[in-house]
Image (tube, rainbow, N blue to C red):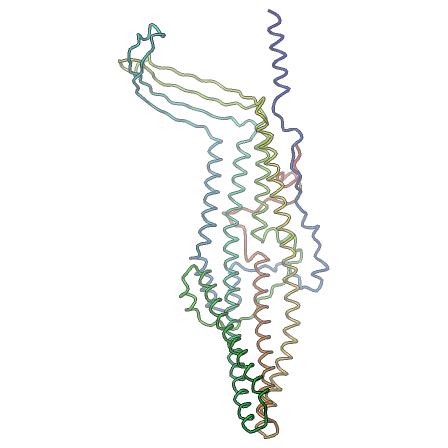
Length: 494
């Protein structure tokens, strides 16, 4: 008889030794410190400011009332924003579901059944059919001793906040895309002006060459060259017309409307670029001003909470349950003292062997954390380099615009002098038309540079966060520093 307790003791020891464990599993991802991303040399010539951030309605600084109305319309009607909002609502529902898992559960029920009682259960039945009636109430509460359900709720809450930030990021991206498409529409009209003028100039040259050929001054060579110039000008005019159609169509899509909406947009006026100064401590400041970085940090925080929740599955758990009700087999009054029953007590569970399911789940959760950290690191590096690159592009464009302005002014002066010479009978009209060709080339180049400057100004505004500010609905993101206040953002170890 003593062998039985000894065998039971050995069996319990082996079972405890074989319990599922999380030992040896941990994530490897480590968030990049913003201070490690040096920008001082790249931004050496940039104008730095401690408060160089765009306003929430940054587009109003471009001074175009039609653009203001178009962005307002897009933010109200574009279907892509509905998708982002739907994802945010879905994440909110999932967070509410995770929160509900932490709370007690109470349910009740009642039923009446026809039951055939087998003859093997005397004296209750003799193979006859009886009526069974019951009414009951059940209470169950998982004590969550190790905080696993709370961690799961916090993880879902972090995902909800990330989706809410993504919804705001979608609005920022949409406003920037509308502004950029609007700039392209303005440039397309400028190209059309130059292409129309060039076609008129080339046609005048062709007509003049035809007269000179009739007078025996020019040959068929000059005529064919002039005819080729007219054909090339017609092609460029068609391309410019098509560019307007494409820009109008792009705006129609961004506004969430049909193609006729784009046709109703008036020609944009020339806008002044809104060039911002660069924040003095760019990498650190970007963390709170770029929606994609804020969302990435929330996802790292959520992934850390998911690891904590997964680890608690390896630990014993206690569940308190109670049930009470009335039950009766056969006829009679159900609601009597003799029909009552109840049960109450704790239930303890300990994972011993699950075929590796819990370890696989924790390993997967660790990988998700590493993935979130890698996405955060990539987003941070890309954000810092975007701002620096756009700043360099704007600096270069200003030099190009200054040089092109001198070239355009010189070409304009040359055209004016050529016209004076022709009117004074010194030079020919053909010479004047040839001089004007260079002026048109410089004017088109100038329009392209100005459009590019405004486009880069919009892009740097977007790269600096586009006016994003975490509000009451979306709290400030967790700190990036690896300290005890931000456990999800440090290098987790088991």
